[in-house]
Amino acid sequence: MKNLTDEELMILVSNDNLDMMSILFDRYHIRIFNFLLKMTRDRDISQDITQEVFYKAIKYRKSYKKGKFSSWIYTIARNIFSDHYQRQKNKDQRLDEIEYKVERQEIDTIEKVEIKEQLNKALRELNPSDRELVIMNRYQGIKYQEIAEITGSTAGAVKTKVHRAIHKLKDCYLQNI
Amino acid sequence: MNCKQIEEKLIDYLDNNLDQREHETITVHLKNCDSCKESIQELKNIFDGIDSDYEELPSTSLKKGFEEMLKQEKELLQESKVVSLHNSSKNHWKTALQIAATIVLIVSSYFYGKQQNNASFSKEMAVLEKEKVQLKQEVTISLIENESASKRLQAVNYAEEFEKPGNEILKALINKMFYDDHINVRLAAAEALAKFSDSEMVRKSFINALETEKDPGMQIELIQILVSIQEKRAVPSMEKLLQNEETPNYVKDQVAIGLPNLI
Image (cartoon, rainbow over all chains, first blue to last red; front, side):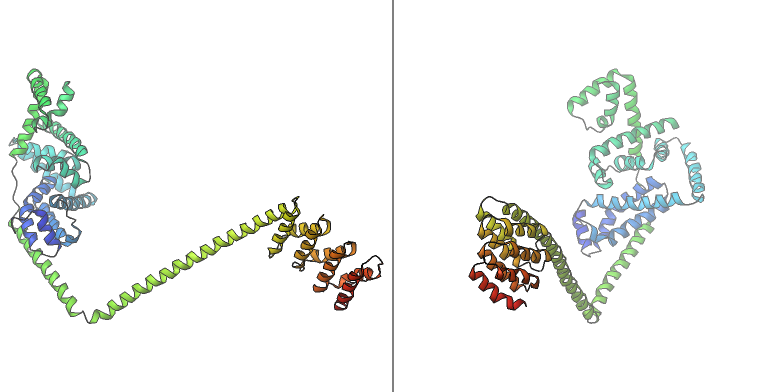
């Protein structure tokens, strides 16, 4: 079973062979978790959302339509994340305080002057959709074409947007040092 | 390529996404342009920084949580299967009812659709029928004025086919009955009008016609019609015909036969 493709495994899952989902979980949960961690900078939330991604993947297994599995699972992850982001935006000021605290922490770590951390800071300054594109393409190595499939766009448009986002990231990064 | 164009291609350059010619052009440009050299260095730093970023591992609770969830989902799946087996007998009537409801729905929607169709069809037919009648009336009226006697005769025969001809048709027919040059047309017109004797206008025209009519054939026709429609107002003119010396004997005979039926 281990040498089946993602898509073959997911077809089995959609035919109620739920055990196959644990192989897919092993293959994908770290990537999904890191994608969310980069987006949220919050381990607990990222872990919760990752859990929910695989829960939804099982719940909605019948709606899987033989497309690329990675695109499908990322689509689910994005949807849950944006629900979460929306909810967070609508919440009262408590969240602003939390964000502020996180920000303070971030500033402390910047003093270690590691490029990596400065980039994380710069990443946080981008708007969510630019941040998402940079994370998917540069951190997670997802090709333009697949990002297009996940976000419902075209490869050409995605490439243009990613490049623009990288330049913005660079500007933020340079302003901080 | 100028510096701006070069800068736009630097990411593709670092990703090795350019064709050889473009790649070489930029390599050459970078050797001579300090600002572009700086730009690419900054990008390189960014990409190096990103590459040095390592994946973080979630805590083991994620895997445990997943396994717990999977177990529950499998039980749920199992349960739903068991439940469906146990309840199968109970659900028989339900299924049957569902099927019955489906059939009723399909059949009724078929008939509904059919009826709808029929209704609109007959509506359409009615409109067409109406248009046809109108057209026929127009044709009749125009034909009735035709120079050819046979055409006029045809028109009179057409007019006869109307169930409820308009006044225009009736007037045209009456006009033909009185004044047409051809006796056959006049006779046919009278015959046609006899069918529409419900109309007061038609009845009066028969009475008037009998008073003024000189042609014996027409007189006989009119007498027959007036008797058959039981028009008592025609009695005076019939008596006049009897007294008139010019009236041919066979016309008088006809009056003598008909008159008793009216009185």
